[in-house]
Each structure stands twice: as C-alpha cells, then as structure tokens.
Image (cartoon, rainbow, N blue to C red; front, side, top):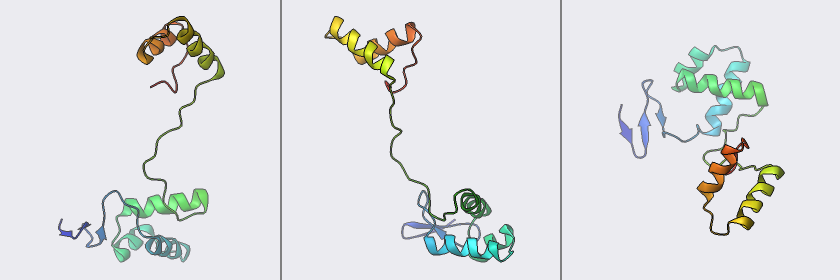
Length: 118
C-alpha cells in the first residue's frame, strides 16, 4: 500500500485519506450506480472504493435518504437527571471540599447511575 501526499492507495488502486469521509461526488456516484441496478461489488471495483465503504454508504442512504457522512469526533452530551443533580448539590453543601470522584463513588453506593459524571 503506497502513499500519495496525505492520501494512501487501497488494494483496488483508489486513493483515500484514512479517517476522512469519501468525497461527495464519489458518494453520489455510488448511489446512482446502485439505483441503476449495479451490484455493490461491481461498484467497488469500478470506483476503486472498498466494498465495506460502498455498503456503508448504501446502507446509510437507505436508512436516512442522505449521502452525507456522519459526524467526525465531538463528544457525547452528558446528561444528569434532576435527582442526581439534587444529590450532587446536597453533597457539595454538606462537604464543600468534596472531589468529583468522591461524589461519583457516593452516587454509586446509593445505586444512582453516574451518567454524566465521568
């Protein structure tokens, strides 16, 4: 497997950048070929894109109607229920110098899930 600038060459001879989405014009071509009845394995060879990539794009298109890639990176929203928030405030009032890991341990002991505290 060789490299071209930042891109790498896959086993089919196509250029890709690891971790980056396939360009939209190639995504669109994949969907158009599939709509014309071309099988995914043929699309893969013709466009020099891995079969897994073709399948992933076609599945996403079937599910969402979009050829756009998913979001890269970001973080999951941290959600604490009102009950957890009340308990945290209570611990902070009672023990002003308490550490977050101590609060988490206390929440675990009283069987309150710690979602949002990690």
